[in-house]
Length: 372
Ligand code: HEC
Ligand code: HEC
Ligand code: HEC
Ligand code: HEC
Ligand code: HEC
Ligand code: HEC
Ligand code: HEC
Ligand code: HEC
Ligand code: HEC
Image (cartoon, rainbow, N blue to C red; front, side, top):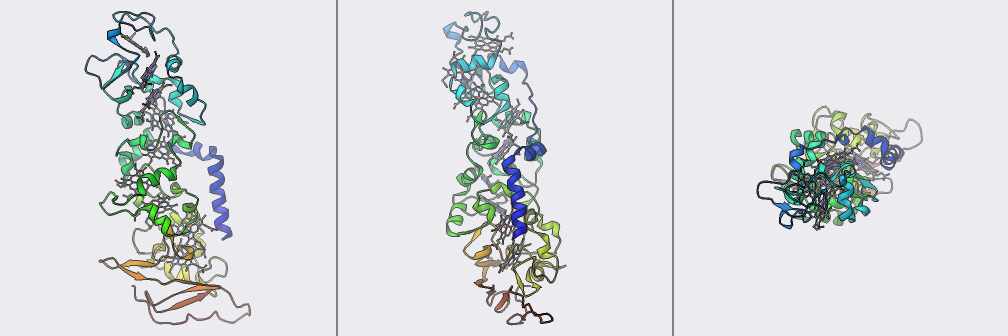
C-alpha cells in the first residue's frame, strides 16, 4: 500500500503545484492568432446578433469612434480596444480579478468579437468551437483524429459546455470543477456511448456503491479519462484491456500501473508485493499473468466503486447473453474467499507462517475453474 501512496502523492504534488505539469502539457500550447480584419467590419448582410452600442439608425458611432457620423466614423477614440469595451462592460472589471484568465481576453476582445454585429450569436466572429480551434491546434488535432470521440465536444454548447471563454475561479477555465461537469451529463439515465451501448448513471452508481476507488473518491475523473477524446477505449488516458481476458502484457494495463506497482503481478511468489496471496503464492499473478487469456482486473474489480472492500465486484457479466456470474467475495481478517462461481469455494490468507520451510496453506479446494 505504501508504494501506491508514494506514486499517488507524487501525482497529487504535481496537481497542486500545477506549473511543471502544465508546462509539459503539449495540449496547453496555444497561439494568439488575430482574425482577418474584415471580420470586424460592420456587416452588409443580415446580422444574427447586433451590438446595442452600434446602431446605424441612431446616427451615433461616437461611443467608440471619434465621429458620430456613420458615413465617416473616423478612427477609434481609444486605441486600447479592450479598455473601451470594459468602460461599458464593467462586469469585466471583476472578471479580470478572477484566478484563471483567458489570455486572449486580456489581449483584445476583438480577437473573438465583432464590435458591430455578426452572423453568429453574441457578436462572435465564428462558431464557438471553430473559434476556439483557431488558436488551439493541439485540441483541434485530438478532437478530429482520435479514435474515441467524446460527445461533450460536439453536443449543445460544445467547448463552452465545460469552459468559460473569459475567466473563472477553476483551473483550466472550467465553468465548474471537472467532477461536477462530468456528473451534470453522466449523472443521468439513458446516455449511450459512441457505439450506441448504454452508459451507466454515474450518480446512482456512486450512491449505491460506497467502496469508491481512491481517485473517484477524491473526485478526479480526469486522473483516468481525457475530456477531449482519446485513442483508448472509454476515452481513457492510457491502455486498459477492453474485455474480461487478456494475454498478459504489462503495457496493456498501463492505466492502472500509472499508480499501482506492476510488481504485484510480476512474480509467482511474494510476501510484500500484494495482499492478494495465499501465504506466499501470489494470486494476482495466478489470475492475471498468463500468456493466454489472463484475467483482466475487471473480472474482480469495479473500476469506479463497489459494495465490497477493495472494489471487488458482486458479479461478472459472462457469455454472450451477459449472464451475471456471482463472485460472492467475503473478506476475512486475514484475507478473503470467493464461492462457487468461476471455481468452487476458495479462500486465501495473506498471513505468512513465519516458520521456515513450512509451505503456505493450500487453497481450500482444488477443483478446476469454470470460467475459461
Ligand atoms: C463598441 C465600439 C464600436 C462602435 C459603437 C462602433 N465601432 Fe466601428 N470599429 C470598432 C472597432 C474596435 C473597430 C476595429 C478597429 C481596428 O482594429 O482596426 C472598428 C472598425 C470600424 C470600421 C473599419 C475602419 C477601418 O479603418 O477599416 C468601420 C467602417 C466602422 N468601424 C464603422 C462603424 C460605424 C458606422 C459605427 C456606428 C454606426 C461604428 N463603427 C460603431 C468599434 C466600434
Ligand atoms: C457604449 C457602451 C458599450 C461599449 C463601449 C461596448 N459595449 Fe458591448 N454591449 C453594450 C450593451 C448596452 C450591450 C447589451 C446589454 C448586455 O448584453 O450587457 C452590449 C452587449 C455586448 C455583447 C453581447 C451581445 C449579445 O448578442 O448578447 C457582447 C459580446 C459585447 N457587448 C461585446 C463588446 C465588445 C467586444 C466591446 C468592445 C469592442 C464592447 N462590447 C463595447 C454596450 C457597450
Ligand atoms: C477567446 C474568445 C473571446 C474573447 C477574447 C472575448 N470573448 Fe466575450 N465571449 C466569447 C464567447 C465564446 C462568448 C459566448 C459565451 C456563451 O454563449 O456562453 C462570449 C460572450 C460575451 C458576452 C455576452 C455574455 C452573455 O452572458 O451573454 C459579452 C458581454 C462579452 N463576451 C464581452 C467580452 C469582452 C468585453 C471581452 C474583452 C474584455 C471579451 N468578451 C473577450 C468569447 C470571447
Ligand atoms: C485568439 C486565440 C485564442 C482563441 C480564439 C481561444 N484561445 Fe484559449 N488560449 C489562448 C492562449 C494564448 C492561451 C494561453 C496558453 C498558455 O497559457 O500558454 C489560452 C488558454 C486556454 C485555456 C487554459 C489552458 C490551461 O491549461 O489553463 C483553455 C481551457 C482555453 N484556452 C480554451 C479556449 C476555448 C474554450 C476557446 C473558445 C471559446 C478558446 N480557448 C479560444 C488563445 C486562444
Ligand atoms: C467535457 C468537458 C470539456 C469539453 C467539452 C472541453 N473541454 Fe477542454 N478541458 C476539460 C478539462 C476537464 C480540462 C483539464 C484537463 C486535465 O485536467 O487534464 C480541459 C483542458 C483544456 C485545455 C488545456 C490543455 C489541457 O488539455 O490540459 C484547453 C486548451 C482546452 N481544454 C480547450 C478546449 C477546447 C478548444 C474545447 C472544444 C473543442 C474543449 N476544451 C472542450 C474539459 C472539457
Ligand atoms: C455536455 C455533456 C457531457 C459532459 C460535460 C461530459 N460528458 Fe462524457 N459523454 C457525453 C456523451 C453524450 C457521451 C456519449 C456519446 C459520445 O461520446 O459520443 C459521453 C461519453 C463518455 C464516455 C464513454 C466514451 C465512449 O464512447 O466509450 C466516458 C468514459 C465519458 N463520457 C467520461 C466523461 C468524463 C470523465 C467527463 C468529465 C471530465 C465527461 N464525460 C463529461 C457527454 C458529456
Ligand atoms: C482509476 C481510473 C478511473 C477513474 C478515476 C474514473 N474512471 Fe471512468 N472508467 C475507467 C475505466 C477503466 C473504464 C472502462 C470500463 C470499466 O472497466 O469499468 C471507465 C468507464 C467509464 C464510463 C463508461 C462506462 C461504461 O460502462 O461504458 C463512464 C461514463 C465513466 N467511466 C465516467 C467516469 C466519471 C464520471 C468519473 C469520475 C467520477 C470516472 N469515470 C473516473 C477508469 C476510471
Ligand atoms: C490516478 C491513480 C490511480 C489509477 C490510474 C488507478 N488507481 Fe487504483 N487506487 C488509487 C488510489 C489512490 C487508491 C487508494 C489507495 C489507498 O487506499 O491507500 C487505489 C486503490 C485501488 C484498489 C483498492 C485497494 C484496496 O486494498 O482497497 C484497487 C483494487 C485498485 N485501486 C485497482 C485499480 C485498477 C484495476 C486500476 C486500473 C483500471 C487502477 N486502480 C488505477 C489510485 C489509482
Ligand atoms: C481474481 C480476482 C482479481 C483480479 C483478476 C485482480 N485482482 Fe486485485 N485484488 C483482488 C483481491 C481479492 C484483492 C484484496 C486482497 C486483500 O487485501 O485481501 C485485491 C487487491 C488489489 C489491490 C490492493 C493492493 C494489493 O495488491 O493487495 C490493488 C491495487 C489491486 N488489487 C489491483 C489490481 C489490478 C491493477 C488488477 C489487474 C492488473 C487486479 N487487481 C486484478 C482480486 C483480483
